Length: 345
Length: 169
Image (cartoon, rainbow over all chains, first blue to last red; front, side, top):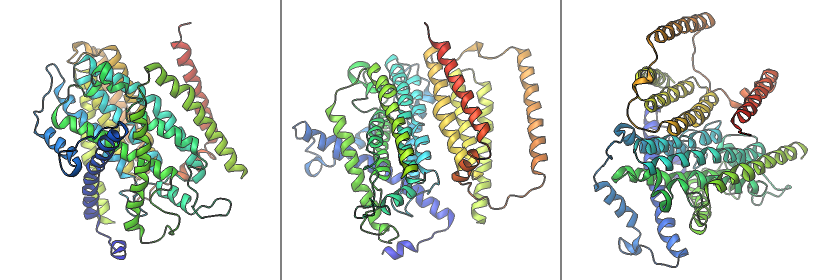
């Protein structure tokens, strides 16, 4: 089985087609899994309630039912909206999510494009969703939407920076920007000569991990950073005028992006698709890699959603001062310390 | 490898056509927000062309700087100052300005085609090797160290200048 996968080398057009199909199947699936497990089950568990129970065994098909419901609804654009921009905006957001999955390695060869600058690519692409959000907020011709979009833009610009800076520590330590290279560096590494658990960078880059997770939370506009969609202040921000499948696309993109960011955190800090007990060159990773990565992603996603369900919303000025006065200086110190130690040790 | 080259050529023409349409719409549209959004198409097309030229690092920098930062600031600024949807009739320049603009455009086209044709003559590019980012950074931090540092200081000066202008006290 594994050897069969290893020897599979399709021609260019076929492999491109397969990659496109796999990404477009994986993205909604991951969004469904995260929504189901965390938004419905873990959230209700944390809030001491049962959560959905009716659709499917123990309510596990609820999100699928909701999705079908959204697809049946009328596609409404408000009066005075810029129809063309209004309709394209969710697709721009979804496209940035799809592009994130291009660089994610699920094992040495199970990756759409093994880029030399994978980390850089991922960070650059994640900044594209803001354009879609701004388009949505402006084209809706609604005050709440516009305010939500402005808040989102300010927030995403402010937290883009700590996220990039947090990753630099890992890049310095690994000596490469390739995501696969970072996985290999962690799993083939050793701590003072002891290679029992490899060398996951969370041990040395825990500051970077903390900043990265905080920035991811803000990039996803999730509580405690959910001012752009704050229901109690501006109804739902830039999403307020969207109905039916366009709203579904926003939802899908948010959760698929959460999965992608959790996967990036798992690759950067937890050793990605490999386990230290099996050499990274093993053919078993064709099957094991995705499973290991998925397990680590669920751990990171649990942290992300745990924070989401626990903390109340920040104020707008608290959000900005947290980014500029705490996270960015902290990340810069982390970079300096990592660079010095890299040279000295 | 041949299949890849064919694919590259087809992709080039599709992207180039999209970029031309986008660029024309940037200057002809009556809606300032639409102009900014058409510019997104042009700039992302440029990034895609860099990828076709196997210059990954340049392409990704293009996305990060132009699309992720500059365009977002454009949109942000437009939305803060004039948020209404719909067309503006005073968006176009005067007729004289249009002619000057067209003249400069033709001049630039001539200059760039001359320098491209003169620079590459009839060099043929076979299979482009992906330019490794490590090589880019090596050359920045050895051969081009001085220009790089000068640019950094220049950007820092611009940053401080912007803050000084924006401060009220």
